[in-house]
Length: 490
Length: 95
Image (cartoon, rainbow over all chains, first blue to last red; front, side, top):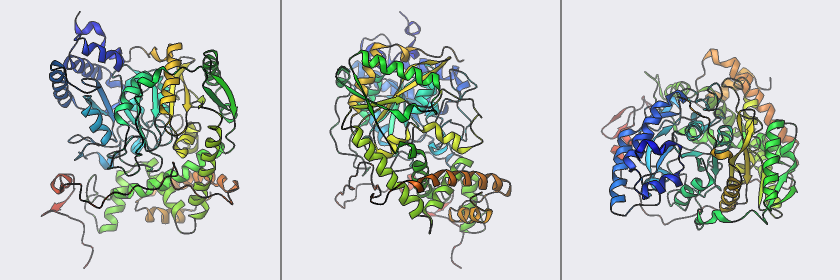
């Protein structure tokens, strides 16, 4: 059987790992096939940088290890990184003009760990500028197209990562999630996306947006593949003082935990008038399937969850306005021409380098932290955040996971929600709570509304990734939604 | 409109952001919309609530005060817009 008969881009990481181990194809053949697939699907605009030379070099190294019976758990397996993970010697733009010439001098810990496990990096994916957006439209490199319908957005901010995994270009991509940026695009593209517990994965080398909310995760086509990657990525890193020193379980071994006996919480507020009726129906069917498999559905209340979006839009912009002060045109990135003085250098560099949404968030953050407004906005939001976290803590005394919709609608048209920032912000109404409380969450495909995929979100208590992945994997054993792709996009 | 053009000019100056004249109306309208939206937090009763300082309510880890990073100045300066003799160049600050 020749390499082409394996349809390599259709396979999951687990399937590819078996094929490599059995000698059905080499890491070089796999890498060449996927690089071809990347070229054939350029219409998605999902990549900012493709790294064929580096990928083939890494693939050859993986083949040499394979020949010697060596190699880590991901030896020869392909991965692409969201373009806010620093990659040594490779452009790292964060989707922004202000970093459009930035070649990182070091690797992010996530990049380093995946490479050390043998993974082959094929490129860097497009994203909302500095991860600020829910549609991939704020990218300086143009919007990503949703492979289910090229006139639609794949969601964001990890839109490029979600689009390439959904379109069967690559099996897995890294992403980051500050308010839903892994889970929402996973839902809108019919992929599996996990945001771990705050501090579970190192943020070292991840360009910071909101440091108390940001967390790295992955987008894949199965919970099993997510478990394979997370087992490598998770763990304490001395270079990130907020990464947590907590044992990393073998997430793959944990997948076999049955859902029978699991208590699944249903939040009444998640099914109110904001939710599209057909999306709601698919989510209810998924809950019924889990109940039929022996899970117990329990109603829980999150009385303050309705305040999560306004809370987020104080806390996240405040942190972003501090973090983005480093972009000053002095040490790296874009610099305005012929500055009159230092103030002019700062103002014009940033005015030219940042897009409209990033400017709005920097200014919102500056406002809520400024003298006279700090108590009314920032301090108030951090108090409401405590109330929201407390609601979750109480709910998890009764249940193992909370299940509901990931997003209020299926994928929307590019350009549809750009006029009003609040309309865009409300895309993340179901996902933001987990970030505010530092909780892990996963989105998995649970059917279709019309021709478009719908996502089921599972949220767990701190460090319950194992439970989420097991529940998702068991659901994916009962259903085939995660195996259905959008068909040809090229 | 909850914010005036003057307030937005002041915020932009604090944030070191130059806005083009053509951007102003849109920025004032959208920032006002955002401020109005987050204003709904004011109604939440939070009298006895401690503000959240860490998502896991943890304290920051400490480490020994040891040098762990090598000097990589040349690597870092490769990205700089203007350098000379290992220094970063900026417009004259002091006369």
